[in-house]
Length: 95
Image 1 (cartoon, rainbow, N blue to C red):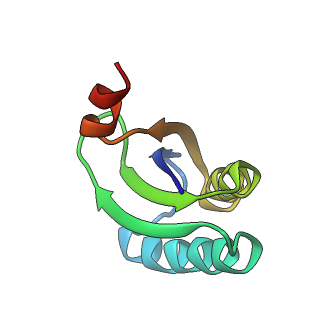
Image 2: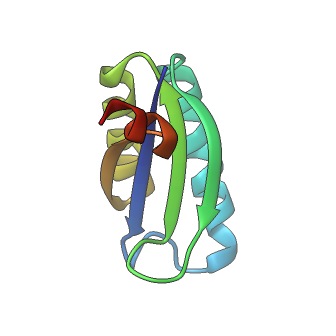
């Protein structure tokens, strides 16, 4: 199963009140759960800096990871970057 990192930068007008972000996050999570059943969410972090959210997911279906990123973009009002991630030891062993 491949690991992917989805970096999200929220649009400045995603919500008017920060308290409302919880509802948007729950709606996005529910859509992804229904539309991308082959994507397993492993971790999510709120971060300070260029990206607001870092998500780590696993899937054997790249098209579903792509769909999840599009849901975050569209419904979550965010810009995303998605990267495949290889565990460091596994990367070194391939050299």
